[in-house]
Length: 80
Image 1 (cartoon, rainbow, N blue to C red):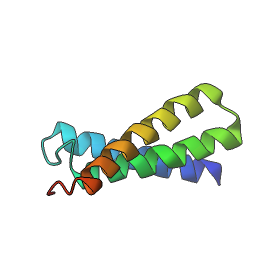
Image 2: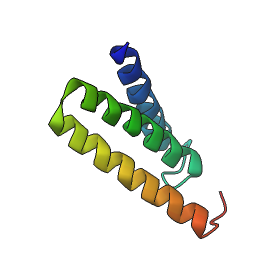
Image 3: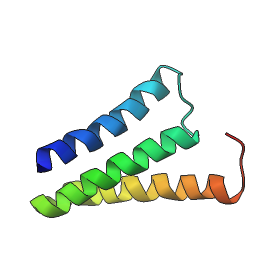
Image 4: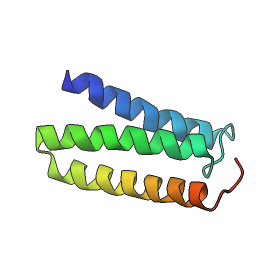
């Protein structure tokens, strides 16, 4: 079950990355930030369960940066 969550989180982050690298999605787009936040939050939760502390640190920071950027865009009402 945990592997399914890990795969889901990783796929979400990788989709955002791939679309950004191909120019299909802007790195400051709501969709990019949301995919990164959800994917990294899932991976962070999985890291807690598996007691993988280095991975937890990386994914928590990744989720925090994504969420901060997303909230900044929402609160300043930056157009999509």
